[in-house]
Length: 233
Image (cartoon, rainbow, N blue to C red; front, side, top):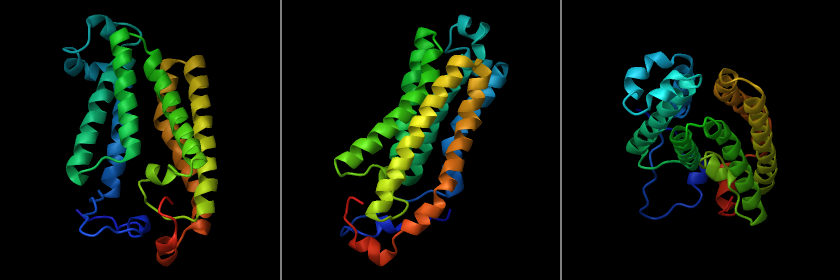
């Protein structure tokens, strides 16, 4: 499997004797990120296909009520994110911050959903996740330690102004997503919310990411500029 080229941010402050972690194939990385969400969507739509697998772990009441699809999908999601983390770590010997935080919240809120028999928790998970991301971005910028490069897994090098403006954009966008999730799960059916969660949120994030490409290209640093940039950028 081919490795992705090392980003400029990885080349600015090399440490003697340090071994850089491997970077997975980008298509495999995408699969590990959206695979659990796709399974969540499919399990909610066709819970009966997963009943033989989840029945030993869920009480019969959760598999027979109106929310049977969502409870089934929640358990499938928990298992899928754990498997994705194990595969990612086995290949790279590291777990990037975003998948780790997302998985931790999915497992925590999923477990609460199943334990308390209350679908509210799994529906609120995206809201909490995006608020946490937005807060981390704004706090990091306030204390002079930008978090956005970490969320992007140091995949690029931007000017200080570029990181600052891009941070404001993403922080605002995360708050918009949090608000949209609250509106959808509180006003729409479970099936509509699941479709909004995936592929709806994925499409929105993808569109927003592509919309930022012109700005990123204008503020991107070349290798020589990146080597002179402050370390925390």
